[in-house]
Image 1 (cartoon, helix red, strand yellow):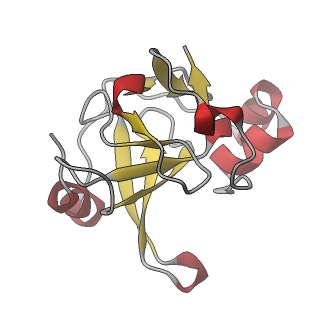
Image 2 (tube, helix red, strand yellow):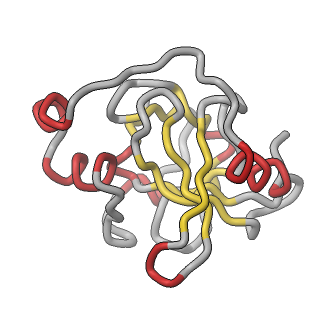
Length: 146
């Protein structure tokens, strides 16, 4: 189980190796994604809070990266954080998410990206439920429910 110390360590010293890498040009990504998916995943955007029905969807299933299809989260790790974005306590595998220090907008946060294709997913915070205490606060448009 990943902890906040693990997340910080990866963000500062380097991430685990992904099982595979998928790289495309910005033009290739733009052809595959909607404008909003592209803005969020390829340009580090953020969707409006409470703008997706995924915030309130708590049924069994899995969530994959909308860009490359890499499996990222299982619904059993999803919880209602009240923040307006889908939230999870753990990824399905430790190496599917990459962590990066993010000091944009006058804040100090940890950005979460898909370790396969570098898609911006959202941020990780240390205010989630036990036992991990993690909250993966994800943009719904960056995820595809399977």
